[in-house]
Length: 347
Image: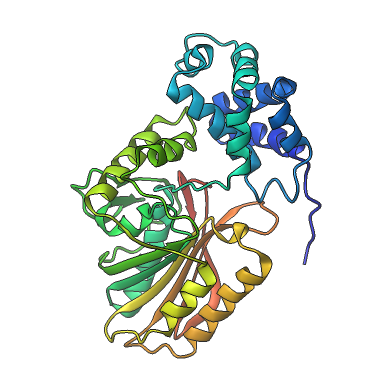
């Protein structure tokens, strides 16, 4: 196994400033770069970032820092920061330096909390994988999701999708997922979800305004289409609350897989940007229990495993698929933008 030495917190935020720009968000790149230059004005935040314990990349430290600043800007205070985000001036250092000075404790609080993003855009790649499974077994889905956060992707059966010209889901839904598609379109297949359940250590509720604001803060401020889609997905979740339990992912999944599966339904275990947050022992347990459950799968009661995760070296995000019986070997269907904005399809 290749072992990559973890970066320092400072180096990780500097790296993400470059990555954000490369991903088409130069505003966020400027925000992160200015945040580093002004970090000394927020001593609590500076101490956390400078002496970060563990791997700051796996902990998404830069995402936490960026979300704190976006949260303040959306709140409208400090005024100079809010004006910067409205593009009324370009004094990044002045506005962000002031925010660090007067809101150091709030920013440090964001840094301490594990991110709970719920990116609806990732459901496009996941649905492309589900199309492959549907064509293989011809059955509707029972979805089990670990790390569900607010459960927005548990509602994927209520969204509409255009995946390189392959249409799926509800084309009248207010939530439409249309990633930039590279490569051949997946073969169309019905998207039929008979049940969807999930688990999270700290489930979020779309009915809580503070929760919605926190989720919105994690969206890049210069990506208004993502912000609008998240707002619509949160509205959908208020109308159709996802079924999420509070608990440990590996323990919950073990209980779900132990429940006898109905004939004529394909059970799907799915996760997106979750494995990096699990301790190595829990990560290995999840993989082992899915593979063990696959040994008992039949064509009448098949099992599929869909993952949307970074590679261990964080060099790319991969959409991977296994199905049981008959497709136990893990296959990479696509490489993807981290938020699902684009999909390079291999099929």
